[in-house]
Amino acid sequence: MPYKAPGSGREGSCVLLIAPDGSILLQQRDDDVLPAGVGRWTPPGGGSEEGESPRETALREFEEETGVRLERLRFCETVTPDDIPELLPKVLHVFFADDRVPRDRIEVNEGLDFQYQHPDGFAALKMNPGTRNLLARFVASDSYRGTVALARRVITGVGVIALDRWGRALLQLRDADLPPDRFPDMWSIPGGIIEPDEAPDAAAFREFEEETGVLLPELKLFRLFRREPGQDAPLADTYHAFFGDPDIDERDIAVNEGQAFRYWAPQQLAELAMPAHARAILEEFFASAHYRRLFH
Image (tube, rainbow, N blue to C red; front, top):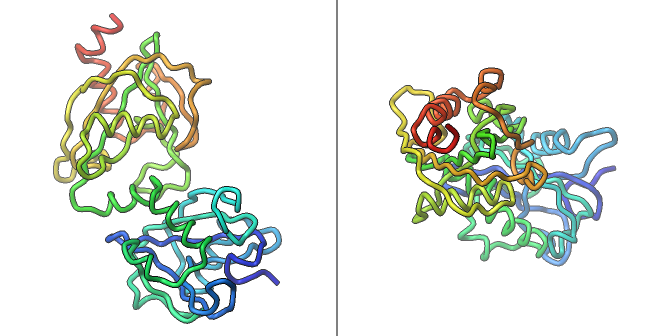
C-alpha cells in the first residue's frame, strides 16, 4: 500500500497550493514520522500507485485529502535528498497551483487540519527538517514568486528580444501545463515579472539569465507598453521590451524555463502559435528604426 504522505522513503508527489497573499496550503499530519512526529505541518501529497504518472499522483492525493479537484496544477521540479537536505522521500515530484480555493471548501479527509500558512510564519510551525528545507527552496523559486506577483493588482514585466547575426529573434516555447490564460505551448518573448524595488533593466538581465543560463553583455530599451482595458496584452499591466544582438549559439542556451528556445526570422512569425501581444511587439520591433539600424 502506498504511503499517504511524503516521508516513508518511497517516490511520491506533493502539491503547493498558493493563495493570492502568498500563503501556502499545508496539512497538519496525524501520523508519527520523526523527528517532528504527530501534528507536524507538510504539503498535501503522497506516494505514487502502480502505473500512475507523478501528475496523476498529485491530483489524486490532493483530491483524496481535501475533496478539491485542482484545475491549474503545474509541475515545478523533481527533487531527492541530494537536492534538499533531510528530505525523507527518495524521489519527490513537486507541483504547485493557484486555484482559488477558500479554506471553507477544503475537507479534512486525512490528517488533523488544513490551513493556509504564510512563509513569514513558517518558523513557528512544527515541521520535519526536510519539509522546512523544501518549503524554503520553493518560496525562493520563480514558480512561487511569479505566481504571487501575478496575483497582485498591478504587475510590471520585462521582455528581452535577443537577436543573432542574421537578425533572428530568440523565442521561448512556453510550458504545456500552463493555465489557458498563460499561453501554454506558444512561442513568446523571454522575460518575466519585475520584483519589488527592482529596476526594469536589472529584471531583464536577471530573467534572461535565469531562463537561458546566459548573462547578456548589454541591453537597450525598445519601448514601454501599457495594457489598455480589454486589450490582449502581456501578463503585466506595464511591459518593458528590451533588445540586443548577442548572437548566442542555440547550443549554449540552457532551457531552464519553458520547453525550448529557438531563433525565428521575421518572415517566420506568421507560422508560429504566439500570444497576440507578443506577435504585435515583435512585428513593431522588426519594423522599427532600432532593428533597421542593426540589420539593414
